[in-house]
Image (tube, rainbow, N blue to C red; front, side, top):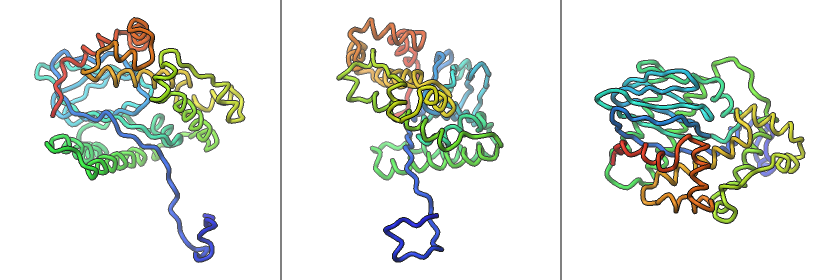
Length: 304
């Protein structure tokens, strides 16, 4: 490794350096809950990874038309962009813990999406390692006090440990990966899309009608629109337009989940001219209205 200029005067050529890392690693939406028989989440997909641990009972997940019957102790990883449904048909109900996370490191994200296994059955070696970390998150949920800064660091530390476990598992599989150049441009395109979609722009420009032009992004990066589309699709598995739609849908769901916000207020916060306009768009995304989606959360009991 080349020694950086500021250090050359007092370090020898034999010095060993750890590589610098500057990844945006985000943990969110992590919660434990108990649901009753008949609970059902309609088909959806996300930009983030989902990691589900079944604590009690059983859950049926249909992931890209493949059925997974999950029982106590099983763990399922749902990659970004994968369509899935969840339901509970057991009389005693279901208790599970779920965490969403994102990693803005294109090669790592691409490797996990395409190479890592999805089901970690109870008792397997990787399941035991993942469960040990996830149960630390569950234990944090049981505490009565407010979360401290130390707790937040422990949550993030747990996520990094899980990413390391998944990375070890995925790297053992021999599958061609994208080149660093492709990963670099895909990451820049994703950042450009996110910069056009942020909390400040929602109120100013209106989320409902906000669009992107891949031609403009490609021109700013000095690459062709065709190459931009190709590189993004290779890494993220979806088109830039679909990526933006997923950002919009994620923000809408986060607001709908807040019971103190009425739907008219939600539609206004998202920049729509009316609740009817927002409802039509949300139904195109999910197949249901915002009020119907909010009602799907009604049978859930959250742990305090």
